[in-house]
Length: 319
Ligand code: DGY
Image (cartoon, rainbow, N blue to C red; front, side, top):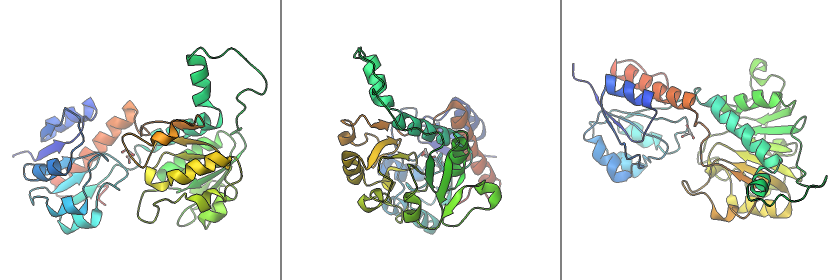
């Protein structure tokens, strides 16, 4: 039987590529450049399936121009804000994602961001690294203690819950906002807030774990930063779209927000150049799921979705 033709848009893990080559007539973009609209449209006429990353944007305009040959987009990501799902559905194209497998890696990184922001990681590293460390004082680089502090989580999905589990190791008092309260077995004692506003009032540390949708665009804006306890620390390992970056800079300027840990930005790649001057912003380049184990798991999960689809079954992660 002829193998379905598969285009892999970016350099996925070696194990993923080996398995894809074994099971599909696979072409990999070894140049690892993001696929633009024209690449995606052209590929749709040559391939039955595409495994893209969040760097490939299937907008409504792109979706409308896809060739009917393309049957499935098996994303190598949990987030699918780069895909216009209604338009792809209207074209009859199946779309899947990779939930679960990246929750721990992303939650780990959120913990790193929270600790790094709270404890002056940027200034501390720079001071030692540049040889500028010629002084010590008890009042030097005094941060905000995480252990036992109140933590607000927006979005108690898989990653939010994995983050809460890690935060319990720091004895944090966990509060959360979610569309609905979790069953007790999942909430594990965390306090539910039925509005974001109510949560913000107790969030000495705030971590964002919700998807980017039209409803969550600029979720953290000037009004909401003002509701945080003064000196709060904010962490974003979800999507840049969730934060009004000018409002964040203003809140950092007044001290309303003491520090931020960010893995996601409005503009990616690149980030916000205005953040660079602020050593109380600890930044990473969207690497929440970037561990060897998780990259393999994401690739395999995308392939399992393809396997099911081409076997005539419903893929586990069909959206
Ligand atoms: C995801 O899976 O959504 C991560 O942000 C990587 O794309």
